[in-house]
Image (cartoon, rainbow, N blue to C red):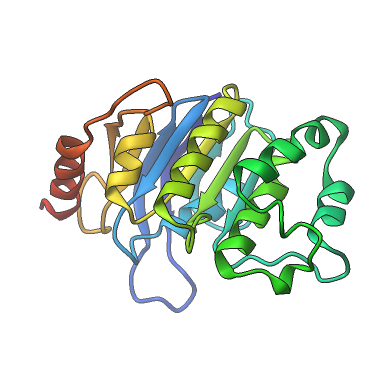
Length: 230
């Protein structure tokens, strides 16, 4: 299920410069991929283009079978009309409900699902919000800093579990954590400022799973060199 962006150019209204100029990207199929780069280069803008939330740009997004693209971001909030478990049960199709308890346990929020969302800490809220998307039907799930405020060991446990539970789905993980994206993702799209050509460079990640011992240091250095190269 490759998803492509072809010759994308975009400028926000009244902005002095373009966010993208003749940008080309390709998400190569199922698995955990990443969008990495410094603040301000357009990672979230590009993610919203892929979902259809931002329109009016030059170029095209070619779905190639990715009919249902979902987007979840840090600080997104669940409605306050019910406790967390009731909300999960309301939005999940039958297939999703079979995964619900396993996700709740892996994400470490068993003690919190009977509470209303606003009672949870920021890290618990982000974990609960991500679960509600994993319970739904999707071809590609874009995770925009979705595990912010979650400790490193819990993030690793969650990422490894998601990779195991959804081997046929595609994920685009947006993070500033260079070590994390190098370690866990199979394809890393390094997004640079619009003054650099090409604006996106694809790097092969280590795609770490539970049965491997990665050494991402070389990749970390390579990605940072790409970001800062002319």
